[in-house]
Length: 306
Ligand code: C2E
Ligand code: MG
Ligand code: MG
Image (cartoon, rainbow, N blue to C red; front, side, top):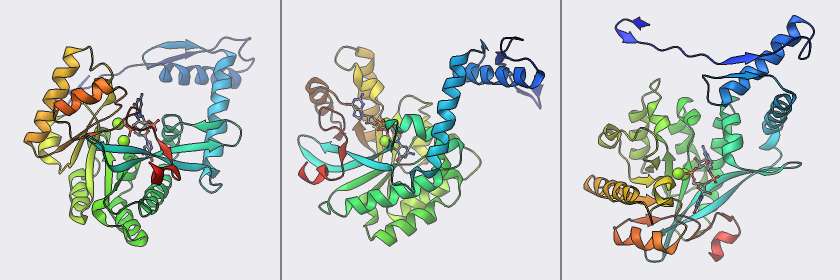
């Protein structure tokens, strides 16, 4: 459809249920079809799925997780790990805080599984505030030259209270603002309902550093680099993983480094797993390295020894 001169596209996902095996009345059948529709959407949309029992099981598991996530924070089940950020050849300049959930029955659940649920349920604002405070308190136990990086979710930007929250937390904890680095992804910037640049500029004025996480995999819009006050650009591990063999990845990484340096932005490579990757990145003047080769995410107590 063309609406006011703008082409708008409509797609569809389809959930299918059959009677009588999936339900004997309208309500049951619609419920089964709805579960199948949910599966079609999680399978990438634009497809059709027929209901089966295992879908119900998956949905139940997700519902269970959703319910227990509501109380996870109060019960102290959330905790942070810290992954070192290394300036070549071997100085630790700080750590990135990474959120984990120790579920009493399921075990440790990674953020990629529960953060989307927390976001959908409106819990991420509260969890994000806890992460910020916990990470800042932890950083106070380190030498004062070390920074702590905290990931922000789009939900925290949308709440409209982010700058107040950050200011309150650094004040309450008593940490220098320049020891805190906030990591955002481009999805945050795509959200047009709030004035992102205003928020970032306010954070910048407070003295907090801002990095653009997972660079290279979303839109990688250059206008963001022109308009936002980034201190660091983190190259997504997708480009680092095959750096040893893939000439295209090498060219892309080299260009990102040169682009960032031209704009006065520091570059961090994520997901460095081998010494060959590390050496190549150092040769290309990458400012900072992060990855399992240099140090896996550590429990809070292990950071001092590291
Ligand atoms: P990210 O911010 O890009 O974090 C880097 C991810 O790469 C982490 O996964 C880390 O454990 C993993 N990683 C580090 N080195 C290597 C390596 O050498 N090889 C490989 N294959 N992976 C490596 P993790 O901890 O599962 O976190 C995934 C994502 O979840 C993060 O990506 C971040 O976007 C999000 N996240 C984590 N903690 C938080 C948080 O407190 N708040 C928010 N909003 N998001 C968070
Ligand atoms: Mg990050
Ligand atoms: Mg990343």
